[in-house]
Image: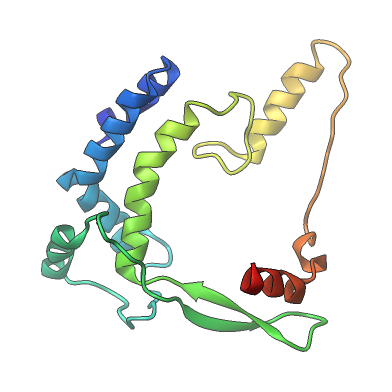
Length: 178
């Protein structure tokens, strides 16, 4: 699977997006990619014992093998999310957190494995936010290296609490009547 991801990355880098999309389809049908997605979700993931709307928390080995055969993109429709209500400070109402089923999480991991190399090839080499294998420490190291060459400006933006100030009722209203 890693070799296939590398080929997707290289195809996009060389400008051959048609080839990359064909390789993505191949990866999504790959038996081993499906097995790896199942392993990530059911064995390696920190939230592996969290039940979704179906109530399943864990899968036995034979259930994991059965799930491989059920993973198909054609006609796939995710189940509704189970809501866990979390009280928000300073608000009367509560907002829900959705928890997908194991099968939906596996499908997300499988699709991520095909999409990630495609988009990673198009991102700037110097962007660090929410990228695999990159951290805030990498960004700081990069800034330090660039600043030491000659004087530069550094923009530091902290959007923490930004989404707490958005009118959620208005957004829900727009989504309902859009």
